[in-house]
Structures are given as C-alpha cells and as structure tokens.
Length: 452
Image (tube, rainbow, N blue to C red; front, side, top):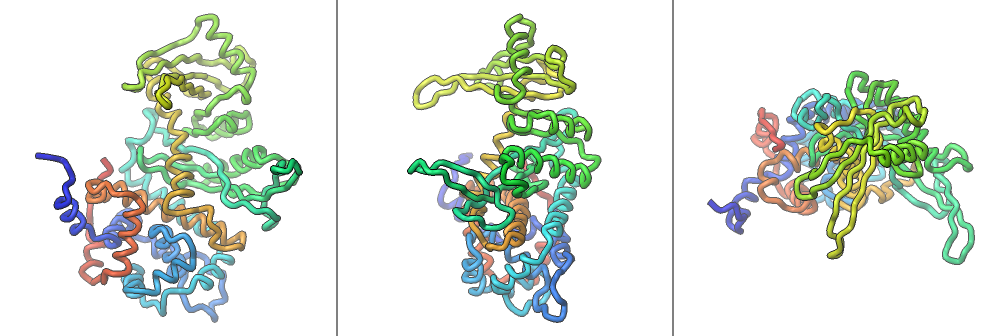
C-alpha cells in the first residue's frame, strides 16, 4: 500500500482534524488544571475595579502566540470576530463579559509578578517529567539534558529602561555609539528530538555599565542554576552549553549540585587545558573511535582527566569529533570539541558526540523558531519592562503546549504541514467552529498521546 499523501488522503485527514478542539484536548491531557492555575495567580489589582478574572486575561495571550498573531492589536482584531467569545467561555468553563481589550491585558501584565507565570511553567515541567512519557530522552545514567544559552530580545538606539544592557560600537561613519538591548538566558529541557521546552528563564539586566555582556550572562547563569536546583532539587541533570560556560564558576556549581556537564571547548576558554590536551594527543596517549554516526563516518578522539596534567581542581575530560561535509560542492572538515566530567570510553563515545551536538537545538529549535517562526519574540507587545517579561513567559508556556500538540497529534504527523499552516488552521477553527457541549466532553475524555 502506497504511503504517498494524495490530495484525497489529505482531504480526508483534514476533515478528521478538529483544530483548536484537538489542541485543547492535548492541553487538557497533560495539564488539566492549567486554566485553574491561570486563575489562581496572585492578582495585584484592586478587587473593587476588576471586570475580568486573571485566566480570562492570560489565556487569550497564550492563544495569540499559538495562532501566530504577532501584535496585541491583531489579537483583538481577530478575536472580536466569529465565535471566539463563546468558544473562550467553553474552554475556560465560565461566563466572560467579552474578549478583553489588549490595553486591559497589558495593564494587568504591567502589575503581575513574573514569578507567578514562572511557577506555572515550573509545575507544567514537573507534570511532564512525572508522566514518564519522555524518559527515553535521558542519558544512560538517568540525566535529563538541560541546555543553557542566551540571546538578544529587543534592541534600542536610546536607553529604554534601567534594565537595558549597554554596549559601545563603531558605526559606519567610524563614530562611537552606544546601543541598548534586552537579553535573556534560557534553560531548555530536551524531552525528545523534536521537543525542547523552556524550564527556566533569567532576564539578563544591566548590573554596571563597565561590565561585559559575557560577565552579565555568567552571573545570570549562576542565578538561574540556583533557582533550578531549588525548584527541581532531586532532578538529575546534565548541563550543555557553549564555551562561555566552560568556566570554573559554572563548573563548580554543576559539581556542587551533583550535575554533569558537557560544554563546547574552544581555545579562548581553558587555554591551558586545551594546550595540555593537544600535548597528550601528540604523545599518542589517547582513545579513538572511527566511523561514527552512520553516514557521517566521523572520527572521535578523547582524553580523560586532562586536569591532572594542568593542575585544575575540576574534572576535565576532553573529546573531539570531526567529519567531512559537502558545503557548496566542496569537502569541508567540520570539527567539534567538548569538555565534560563524564568518563569517556569507546562504548559511550558515539552517545557523547550526539549529546554534545544537541546544544544547537536551543538555537535551531529554540531561539530561531521563536524569533523567525510563529512567535516573533523580538516584537514589543508592550514598552513596560515588567509586561515585556510576562509576554515572554506566556510565549514559553504557549510553546510548551504547541510542541506537545505538534509532536503528539497523530493527524498532524501524517499531514506533515508547516507550523505556520497549523497555526492558521487553529485560528480558523477557533473563530469559525462552534464548540459544543459534546466537544467539551470529547476534550475531557481520557486519551493516550504517543510521540514516536
């Protein structure tokens, strides 16, 4: 029987797809109390002057992200039409005066503590870990992969607020110029090859004008790692990061918390370790493994405990991997190098190489998708610094829901349509479909979700 997706097969699959109803069903499967959690946030408003409950203000912003609506005005324009009001009542299980105006939403987000949304995300991650659906993503030692990386969110020619990072550049005319920006550090948890979700966020804010962005990011990493340890005290983790994190303060934190680490290792970081590693390679006292990663047929070399030669007081096992890749019809040597505390041998070398390369997931499947895909996280939905943080956190919550929907909805996997088309379909059904009591019964009915 042919596996080709003909127009007729595609049409029949699309007829079975319930759009937003299936999305809410998967949301309810993993997070049955999400709406209640949104309703239970600490409300900073004066209760005598409130029209909307907190879930009625927050859930539409989550849907805005799911539907790839890039501005708050777009959200209002689309949600004021069709069946959105009635459908939102069905999904929240309560009567709502109307879809709240975006100014009302932003006013609330200016006052709401970001810690409230962070706690909701933390509980969502806990529920996913407890579900055991994603245990196959762990390393053989039971560690979950947690990837650290920072990125810029917003850039300004003038100081936007006291939180702005400041950097001096030389413009095209050769003049010195100050630029201002907001950056964020993310800790992304790998649940599957196609599911990488936000576990923690630290907003990188100005400390002093004479401190570098790198130092700010390292300090932010210290704070974020401390908070993660507090909230997930028993979780076994392996921290992945670029060469910026291959620094003693970060390594010491990992060791103190009982976490493993795999960091990219470049000449600019840990120079003495790299030099001693090269010296050991020259002596021929190293392990090696050939023909790795199937079609790449790559080559790996490794040395355990380089720190014994260098005199460092942390474990420094170093390994590298290289293979030849066709780039513009030319054979190009691609090379990676990592530092880890995990003991290296021929049995685990291929797994270690695969794991080390997963750091790119936070850039390719994390930041790049959120910046250039359906969310456009660089867009300013508010100029208020506190509201900006809350918008970002709501996007991370929306992204968790969207990734589970994309990876767990059987029909979507068969249709193989783009994420943008999927978002458009969800918006269309939210506006055009009338959610019935029968649909609500379907949403809460028990189901199983498979990610293979």
